[in-house]
Structures are given as structure tokens and as C-alpha cells.
Length: 528
Image 1 (cartoon, helix red, strand yellow):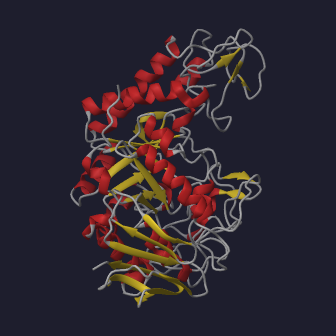
Image 2 (cartoon, helix red, strand yellow; image 1 turned 180 degrees about the horizontal axis):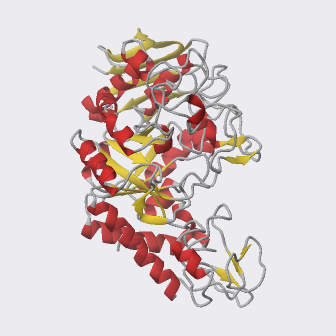
């Protein structure tokens, strides 16, 4: 039986920060971010209040999918530095009370990985999924081995064989989950994790964690695989955390993960809970999405109900056994500052993120209001559809004013991606000097969350008003209101006790049993 404890104690209070390493800070002037660049800016994260950093894949790769196509799981990509540079980064982070999580690409490799190159020459090698005849979704062999292989995402990412939950005489490539190939891959997965844990990482976020066992109704066999990994971690590395890219927290936690994210995909509603909060159709958009206006929009046409319903269901199913993570954005999904959403609209979003009973995850640059940049060229596989270009969320971190925003000493034309050309773009240096800036607001909200555990991930939330403003109480002691629309809003709360004390407010007042909220406002109060 897998452990039902929710994981290491530190995770319960974590404030996560996702770093896309190509774009965070370039220390050597080649136009691409690196480990030393991240290390040089750890003080920013410590000052902000972040205690857990998740790095996108930094393994050796040809970067046809931005590093999610791995050629060596045990060696960093030279663009970022070597193993010693990585170890130095982990140690420097630890010295500031910051843990480092790695992005583990578990379900596939690059088609240039030595495992695949060998498999493409050897018909007896079952590390990957091979068919001896054309089949839907399979790709022709690039080697002397006749046949076709199954990719996991792009064609350059052959799926590692973790077996099939169901066999079929018409499809003889469907090996059982305990066949030699799947067994070898499960052993390799643990060996990879062990290698990085011994170098000081505090855990992993697992890419496409739901995808390992194929044709797996209910993900039963996939869950068995991950609960086995979790049992091993609990015994060998009890302070390590295992986070999923699943998009269905109840399913992922039930499969042995310590936490999972609400994402723009996953679950019965295909990511609607997260999209109903942030997605305003101004950035990365799948053509099949069909949703109304999001709640955090200026016109006030949305509702928080899809999120609230999904969160309530997931919270009931994960209580006592794992955590739900709520992100501002990620490398695959639009930033908060996307399309028509302006900088003044972002503070209420952070107030919600940092007072709701989930683990908050800040995508790099969102703390200053970096915007999604439309119209960028396809970069390392960033384009997934006519309106889904991930490059817009992956532009260089904006540290200072100037031609390259303090990201790099390289000339602008050599940068991994262009810097936001807006002359009024936000940057860390300018916002540090302005106590009214978004950056200071986010810092205060993180500090408030830490100072008042009742505002953290544990416990529930009682929703007092599920419209504009959204009003809820935490721990029967704190009252929170957010009004993300442009127009003012108010709500009667006649049963409020006397002595409501403001802790952190911007445009929200409580008096005589009524809460009044200006446009784009928030308020956190302690109840008397």
C-alpha cells in the first residue's frame, strides 16, 4: 500500500516558482539562460519569499521541443553548464532556504537518445513501442530495424515502453506492463531520480505523468507504476516531493503523487477550472476550447463557479493525502498579463492565488506583470496550433531597463527569444524601487500568507459570495475579497463580527455589514 501522508512537511507551506532556464538569466553572453544566471538571481527569489523552484528540463537535448526531448538524463545540457554548475546552483539555493525541483521527462526520449538509436537497429530491443506494420500514430523506423515506433508527443519523441494495460491479438506490439522492456524502463526511471536526488534536488515535477502505460482505462496501471515509485521515495528519500503534470489533482494524488496542478488541460472538463479563471483568449488557445468569459476579466462577465466546483471536488478527494497546485501560468499556457488584461488587473489575481487553499505556483516574470508576446516565430517546437504559440510565454526575464532587459550581455538579435519591445515593459529593478508596484504587492501577500497559516494551503474556504466581488473566509478568522472587474462591486455581509481588521487591502472597505470593492481591488481582513 502506498503511504497516505501528504508528503514532506515543507511542501505543505511551499510557494513554488517556475523557471524556464533558457529565459531566466544568461551569465556567459551567449543569449541563452544558464545555471550560473539563475544562481546570480537567487536573492530576488529569497527576497520575494519563494522557497521552492521548479526548473524546466535541463538535460542534454537537441532542443526540438525545448528540452523535453532528452538525449542523456544524467548530464545537463551544455548550454546551461555542467554537473558542477548545477550542484553549485542547488547548494546556493539551499543556503537561501530554497529547494530545487527538476522536470522529469518520464514517458519519452529524443529520437537521438542512445537507447533509441540502439533500438532502431535491434529488433529484439523493446525499450520503445514498435510495430511491424503501419498503425495509427506510429512513425517509420529511422534505422535498419524494419517497422514503426510510437511517439509520445512530437515525432522526435519516441514513447518509452511501460506496457499496455490491455492486450490485443490484432496489435501484437502491446506488451504487458511486466514485460522486459517496461521493467527496464521502470528501473531506469528510479536510477535517474536517484542520481539527481543525490546531487541535492528536492524532488521532481513529472512531465505527462498520466501517459506512461498505454490504453489504460482509468489509468489503473499507470497509478500502480507511480504508487510504486512513491513507496520507494517514502522509504529512500522521505523528504523528496513528487509533483505531477496530470491536470486532475484527485487522479494524480490517488496515483501516488504528492501534488498536481490545475492546468489548461486534464480532468473531465479538459482544463476548464483553470481556464475559467485566467484564459481570456488572448494568448495560447486551443481551437476546440469552448468556454465563456473568464472570471478575471475587466468586463465582469465571468463566474468563479467552474473553478470553485472543481476545487471543492478535488479538495475532498485529496484531503489528508496530497495537495492541489494553482499556477499563474506556465511554459505552455498564457501569462496572466495576456491580451486585454492590463497591469492594474493583476493584483486581485495574486491576492486570490496567495489566499486560496492551494499551493501557489508563480511563473517567472508574472510577479512583475510580464506579458505574453504574440506573433513570435516557432522556436524549439513552440507552435502547437494556429493560435497556440508557447514562445509568447517564454521570453527573457526582465530584470532592468535596457535593450536586453538585463537578461544577457549578448546583442538583442542573439537572444533565445526577443525581449518585450514595449518601452513601458515592467522590470524588477524599477519595481523594487516602487513600493506600490505589483512586485511589492506579491511580496507582501506571500509574507502575509506565511505570517498567517490560516491563509495557507491547509483547510478549506467558505465562499460568502461567488460573484463580483468573490468573498470567502479562511479558518473562520480571515475574510478575503477580490474584485477583478473594472466596475465597483459590493455585497451585504450582515453577520460579520465587530472589529474587522484590514491586513492587506487595495480598494476594499468593510463597514456596517457591507463590503465595498473598487474596480480591480482586493482585501484581506482579520475577523475580530
